[in-house]
Image (cartoon, rainbow, N blue to C red; front, side):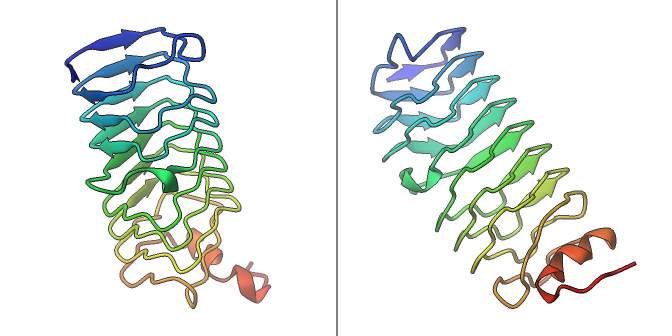
Amino acid sequence: MTENQVFERIDYTVNILPRGEYENCTFLNCNFYSGELSHNTFRECRFENCDFCLAKFKNTALSDIQFVGCKLLGVSFEECNQFLLALDFENCLLKLAVFNKLKLKKTRFKNCNLQETDFTETDLNASIFDNCDLQRAIFHKTLLEKADFRTSFHYSIDPENNRIRKARFSRMGVVGLLDKYGIEIE
């Protein structure tokens, strides 16, 4: 097990990250582009300004993980080990990411680009979407009860197809709940 280590400016496309358990580690400005992170365990780790575009997380345990300023374009989080899965995202690029059928209660997305991200059948109860771009994000049979969308924008959520009881939206954002009706609001 690797504990309390700082990994800085490592190109893991050249030097592959050794498979193992990483606890309370920090990864700064590392390149995991299209990398193989499968079957690793990360607990209480922080990834800052790292590139995970198209990285593979099959059976990877991610418990209490912070992603700050990271690129996670096209990452399929649905392949992660779901046991104790807990994620936090700030200033991240998550376009085309996939979170299908995950339990992500109370997850925080702050200042993130979530365009075309797939949240199909995801449990996002009490999650916070703070100043996020959700253009063409997919919400289908998604649990969004008590979720907070008040400062986010460009979302389209069908209230008949998703559970949104007690979710919070801004007055301007309510338009995103009416998209399917094709009405014009002035």
